[in-house]
Length: 277
View (cartoon, rainbow, N blue to C red):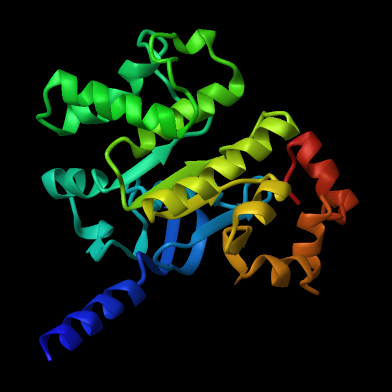
């Protein structure tokens, strides 16, 4: 009987969403950039957030990371409401998250190994030898073995991305966030990074949220895709459903078609002259 109860409890936990966003809106001053966002990310899945420039991808990511607070709505991450946490509790929750920032965000004055050890140094009381071992383990995982003494300036673009991923997973997070992980890389290296993200998910049983505008990467790694358009969710669905969507706005995004804008001649002239109509 006890075994049955334990099994049921484990299954219930596995079915619980890792991230729940409810009715989230965000303003910068008088400008609203996110509108009534509802999004659920399941345990162990890779959720890709994509959209055109200015769609709100970065703002949504920064809300999910707790770097900014929404104007309204709720964000539950690993059972905690981010909008109600501050100080020590928010720091503790972030220790269960890993972030690979756009461009790598490595400290140029620190070696690769020191960059990777930084979260351990800041958030643990491990001795130096243990931190060295953990850093080497993660460098092995991302295929950077033996590169710990190099400086960021000595790395290729792909190696910078790998080092950033090693730092993001050095504390074995439950949730990994990646901001444009394959941006700026040639197609071959981009595919290697995509493969690495898939491998990391499997190896560490992580939930992964990826923000990207790279369609090939999105279609390769995603279990589901969230399409943002003008600060609103246009769709959340599987790769195949998104790819075959009959929504014209989604197809414009996938086929990189710019939206045609009708120009009012009088309004255009007024903008140029500074006059008001």
